Length: 387
Image 1 (cartoon, rainbow, N blue to C red):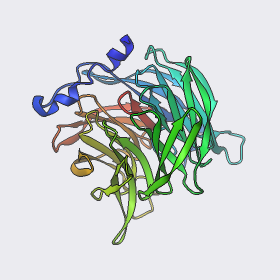
Image 2: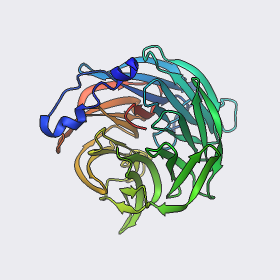
Image 3: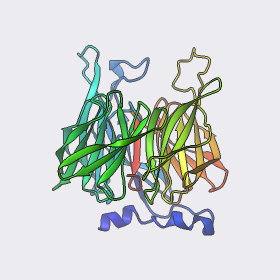
Image 4: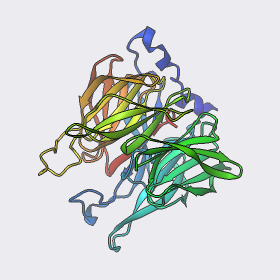
């Protein structure tokens, strides 16, 4: 319990923002960054390959710093949800949707690795084991009770379940989804016995989990094409999914608010192009959305841009309102909020760096000077608040 107290010692700060104004980070917050060293982008070659790794970060009043790194299979392909922490912060679970074989043809293939890392002492992480899920192992979800793990397998069109027993991942089977679903993200609901699964094909599914296995419920809902990432309100009543919809002149990006009881979908406001991921603040009052905004396109493409965008949406149930935005680095991926809700940590894969932004709780969002460089391309980020 001592570890859990110091990792989450500022859990109550976010609840005081409305009455206390701007508050500094006063205790250490632990984050983990999964980083891809494989040749995954145009122009990358096998000569530039570095080990995939998990970076353990500390955020406090002095800024953001690296505590340790450890070699772990990782991937930046897919939504930036391939790493999660257990609620007590003792373990990180990391998936890798791609595997690299320098002698293969092609050298990159669908990966299925899922690793369990011991973070009891964050400055001395220990890889316990690497097990296998399904092809294209992508989004990871950890149950609120810390006893179960789900992995969405985009290429295998399935979701795998594991139990955490005695400090190990124990396979509990998998369940298939309708053809073309491409499960990419999952979130447990507060009961730890059900979950929502987002498919890249544009639908959201309900999953029942019990002692007898997993069952995909018959009720589903259309969210939007290219659905990517899912966040869940603290009370579990509303899920938020980034997607695209048809609009005049083409498609537009938005975040859908989904009633978890009925799967009713309420579309949010139009956003800049190509949502990559999203992160909900601890109190649930603010939602960060990472937008590629042309940085994923070739330089010759007329829609190419040299900077992406992040936006902050104010959240009130199924009502979303944009309140702030800022320009970012290129091909940015995972994001996480500080516990006081006044900082956002953001990974930018093409720049191989992790950026920090300050948010005043109202309308000002700005990048601070401190930038943390990485060896591989950072592709997923988590802290203990985001399950």
